[in-house]
Image 1 (cartoon, rainbow, N blue to C red):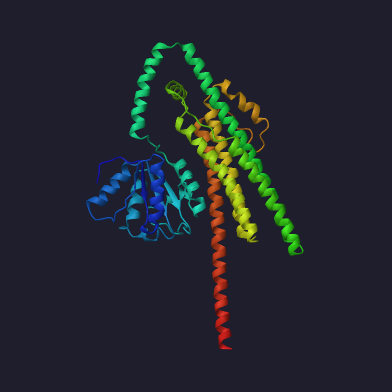
Image 2: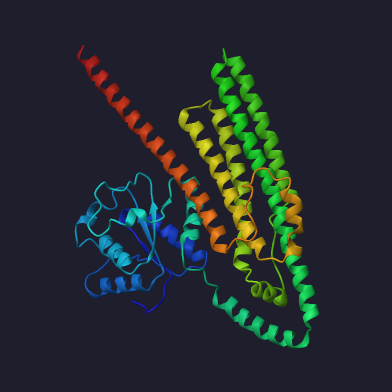
Length: 414
């Protein structure tokens, strides 16, 4: 085995290979050094070296399919050995709970603390990318840059040293004011759009509530069709508004020259966090697009079961709490900027109604991150709640199928 350092160790059952491999691919693409064993484990020294890899990683990601921990009561089980090693070495453990996984009532000996770690729920293809994004927020290790970028960074540092020797403090101060002011304006302008998106989401919730109420009371199919057409018209208007956001207010870019990047670094403004903002911005616009498509699909098949309604409710709630998380990240970045760069924020925030009110700009970065984690935790809880509802409906359908089979057998005997 190569003597190579890794950030993240992924532990998994062979039954969840495809999902674990996809997580590894996405984390590597994001810049993390991931250890993912793709070969069948052999005995002896190779397995002991695996434990050495765990001991030297910062993060231990445990992929949990259905009944993943049943075999962990066996002290020779390798998933058990890997988990115990991670616990004993005080690694940052992030369980990833797949479809149908539940914590056993009796945890394997030595693994009792495992359910206390912050877990990520990865249920269904449509939520998977969001689950991986949430997973990254729980990792302690940071993504690394390719060697080419590191080489450019080394050149940037040398260039900056030369530049700093030839410029005055006044020029530096002016550039800092302009650069930080531009960042503050871009961030606030984008949050104005996110405020509008949040208002659209709230209107969508209210429109759906009115629709369900009217549809359930409708007296005939003609009246139901009129109610459905009203909902489709509402969705069409929402799609036009969404297209306007995407066309007129694209995600901000934060591309700066060497000196400006140095100034950002000097103020402890992390470039990678600024670069992450456009991704989440576009993701939220995509979430609204997905909600519109889900509503149209629901109306086209006239399917308004409790599960369909609950799924839309979960998607809207997920979007709302992700918006809140983005807002706390925005405040964290803004708090690092000088007072002059916050003017646009104070002007705009007076009109905002969707975001959490009263959060100051003088908190620590850890406190803003804690607020974000709380919002993500609510998202995960919403997903677990929906999963339970799906499992309940599946059990109920299975029971109905058994009853139908029994009735058919009795009918055949008559």
